[in-house]
Length: 105
Image (spheres, rainbow, N blue to C red):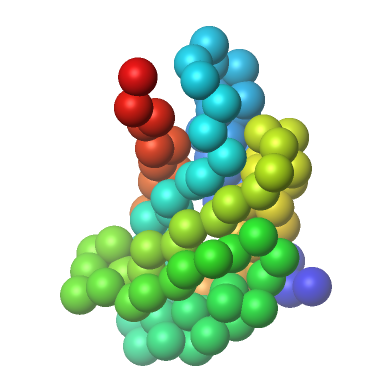
């Protein structure tokens, strides 16, 4: 596996931690908005599509450059799969945002 720059994993951990400790209905889906190095978005999208838990990756007319949706059967697994997918991206720039979707009441 390729190594991601350290700030990406630290930021992903910080954001993913928020999802695992917030008191809210359990939702096992995360949307990730990624800024990717110029000209690499399609290459990164193709690679991410093969990662476990990744159900959708689409290049955007960014920034952000990609949207990725990750799903898992449990919250802990979701955090782990998200970190693994992000760790596999070596051309990410300094933009990363993880969005937890809100369940209807």
